[in-house]
Length: 238
Image (tube, rainbow, N blue to C red):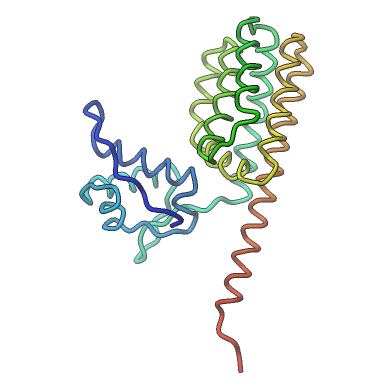
């Protein structure tokens, strides 16, 4: 684990198990808990300042959402990300994001487009942590979804949110990707401002395809590093 979890903040409006679940899910999405890492109930409970019971319940719920895998006689581990996982999510996302951008090109108001432009200008030169970068990227896409004026579409995209977030954290951590993503966002906003439906759809689709390719490259490099570390740690043969 790269860094320790922070103690949870108690919220009287939410059960403790839900707070712990959301905290652990966020830690997985942001890479604090890494793929393949074992989840030790006692350690997690100590770091979060809670008992083991809500941690155990949270881990079970994370398993149902495919963030955690249970290995018999070994315990709970953060689920890895497979090539197919990425391909499946981005395939769906490309279709839905293209649809949202096309609808937004038809329906976005001048005020909404101006809000998107201000959003890009505000975040363009700002030094941000990975968590802030992911939040910023999420915020921009949320503006486009809202401008589509299709509540069912927004709801479907919201249901994909957690899976998308996990991939966002990986792809946006790649050096240079943030600048490229902002440039791609700017192109989408310019198409929306012209109310060019086809261009907005094409640019949104291209943006997602690029993010997918970056994600695959990040996974490839990560696996190469893991193999290199395993080779370094392997005992030398005489």
